[in-house]
Length: 189
Image 1 (cartoon, rainbow, N blue to C red):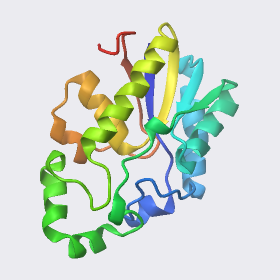
Image 2 (tube, one colour):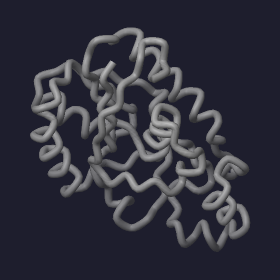
Image 3 (cartoon, rainbow, N blue to C red):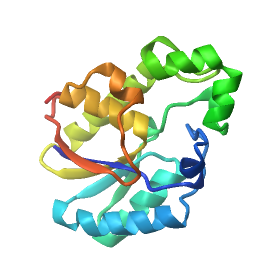
């Protein structure tokens, strides 16, 4: 399967540095514009379908692409962003003050910590991997768009491109970034 990884368009929370996690803000005006520009760029990719996280910012992005390209869209909850527990809806600056040691560890050793009341990266990895393996089995010879979030995309890149596991917190993936990777039906490159 040829997979086009796509990060959702911009939200107001992206702009101000508010942690979204599985909170559900909508795309802002710029994010909607970004999604339309993305759809135009994706015309050359020959996508047969698009799969998306159920969070509104991802669904809105996927709907714009799906409609523009006249391709079906499916929703997979396993593609949701990491649940950031008590950090969700807080500004980064607030988190740094409220959880200074834990947040510093999150930034430098993300696999060693879990946001309070949140999800560990290994849990996100398991669900994202299962989603990709299922997609590859169902669409082995197709080009599929996948609209998700920064952490799930970083985890996919880590697994299928052999990147170091600690890139999960530092990898720069701007809104509406997209990239092709190839996934074999067995789920490994």
